[in-house]
Image 1 (cartoon, helix red, strand yellow):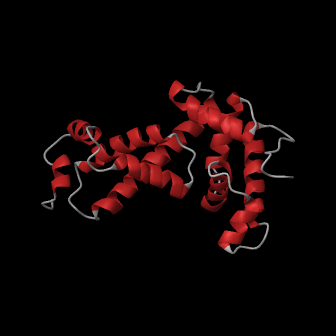
Image 2: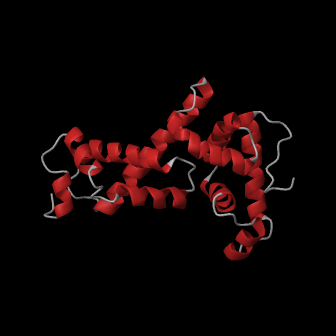
Length: 191
């Protein structure tokens, strides 16, 4: 393993010991990496939950890390792994009717308000939005989180007029499918 001080976090330890080292002060800067990752990938995942899961994925995989690929690339793969696990768990929980955790409530309340749906529906809507391909998710993120308009996104991207709106229509259809809300419409998309 390279002689980099950050590798002291991984050196001669069990996953549990590594997790304790990572959680204490976040020496690998996983929390800010998670925030940026969620924004780049446009995943609607609670940032704190994502950070905690990323700590765990990193600690578990760190035992076998020997310096390749580069740490930044390796950590990015851990973030992908954490997101995949959380997305799968949430989809399974929604499908099997597992109640929403208290931790997820604030995240979902924001989504419920932004979409104009009742709180219990927001969880299904979140799963629906996270099931979209990356580009439609990014459009939804820009409109929902950043408060931007579809026409603004089209102008900035150089895509044909209506491209962002088409992504929003995909989002509405996905939400309708997951929530079984026939005729529901998101105020950001005039259908």
